[in-house]
Amino acid sequence: MRKINIFDTTLRDGEQSAGVNLNLHEKLEIARQLERLNVDIIEAGFPAASKGDFESVKQVANIIKNASVVGLARSKQSDIDAVWEAVKGGVSPRLHTFIATSPVHMKYKLKQTPEEVIETAVSSVKYAAKLFPTIQWSAEDACRSDYDFLVKIITKVIDAGASVINLPDTVGYINPKEYGQMFAYIQEHVPNIHKAVLSAHCHDDLGMAVSNSLAAIENGVTQIEGTINGIGERAGNASLEEVAVALHIRQDYYQANTRLKLDEIKRTSDLVSKLTGMVIPPNKAIVGKNAFAHESGIHQDGVLKEKTTYEIISPDLVGVKSNSMVLGKHSGRHAFRTHLVELGYQLEEDDVNRLFVLFKELADKKKEITEEDISALLVEQQLTN
Ligand code: KIV
Ligand code: ZN
Image 1 (cartoon, rainbow, N blue to C red):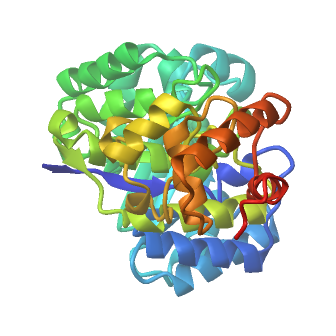
Image 2 (spheres, rainbow, N blue to C red):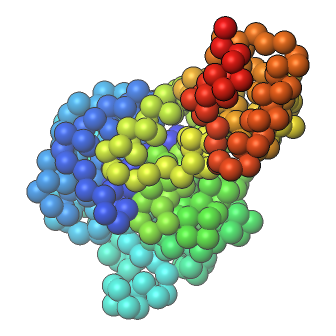
Image 3 (tube, helix red, strand yellow):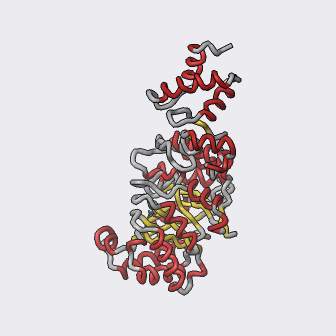
């Protein structure tokens, strides 16, 4: 079983979600919960971005004892110095430095030739190597870069001292097959790649961030970057909880796993949602309100007979207390009777049937039938004694 390292960037890329701004206290609370979840690496922020970011990265580095704390830096000495000052007190300080490698970014954003980009990247990694025990280097917009250019620059930054190579799909453009092929190409053509850990960092613009991350794992990647609830720039990053649970549930296929405490997932997700104000869609995989809710009669009947008929994930695996049977117009008699029993009513079969007809009439008019609705029906039918 291969071990996959989880690099959490909720506090950096996640905080780049439009409208999100976490204060120091909130960042520390999230960092502590990420430590409980057992992530391997916490990217706590971008120290050169602001005094506040510097301070929060520093404090996170000081309190976290069971994960490596990382700060982000452009390929600039002043950014690298700021990260070092912020994380040097941590148990396992790491730098994450990046430069764009795609033609469009190099030409319009950096206004540098490819040769100049290589020179900037190599000199910044060499500079950082004097300070940091671990340097992660990222090729921003890797997926729209020329692969042979990537081979060239990666070979040189590894020689300069980078030991983690991250190839981000910065704009969420690639698909799983292509992303896997890109990692295969890099492993085949970069002569010193065995000296580095390969990392994937996916954005969700086309809704493929999690699938792309899993495809990267299938192609030799051993570090996955992402955020809790998939928050992040634009459409967000890969949802770490989805990646981790997919690996766990499909160990037979991926032959890889993380060291996350999966039963801390729900608590972490709720905390991040509360503090960022980013609401979790009800149908979100793993952590959505409906992820373990069964509505239709056929599904409810199946689950009441044997959970695994319609549940591939046990709710308690991810820290959710139990599944739920939502009473609505698709619900069947089996779930309805179970609800009555849970409310404390053991009724004769005739009474259940009579009540069930009334329940169906009501369900046609309402989206969800509550306990109060059922109680009202029982009172109306004089079945409460
Ligand atoms: O998406 C991206 O390219 C990034 C880099 C800074 C790694 O977030
Ligand atoms: Zn990103």
